Length: 127
Image (cartoon, rainbow, N blue to C red; front, side, top):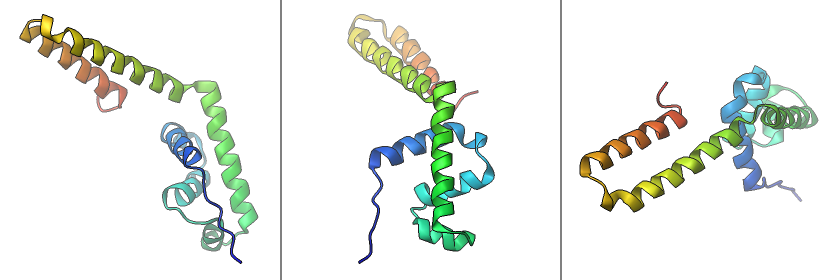
């Protein structure tokens, strides 16, 4: 009987989000294992065979990588900061929508332009 370990979707999303912020702080090998396991959905056995190592070595590498990602977030709080800015931008957007009928069209366009630029900065699209 083959046992298949299903990943918790919340864990997959969390690791992916942390990886998007902190991947450059991991070793090349850690980055590769995270990509193979979480992004390409390869099993521990498939990665082990591809890398010429044991499943246990793959598991240990992934575990250390995940712990490193969590440690970076605990210290740097980039994900928490990002989420806080996104929440505040959502609130600001809702406020603009509520007051929009009371504003001049030109003022509405200016506000929406500022919001769009703030959201682009927050998403890393403007630097």
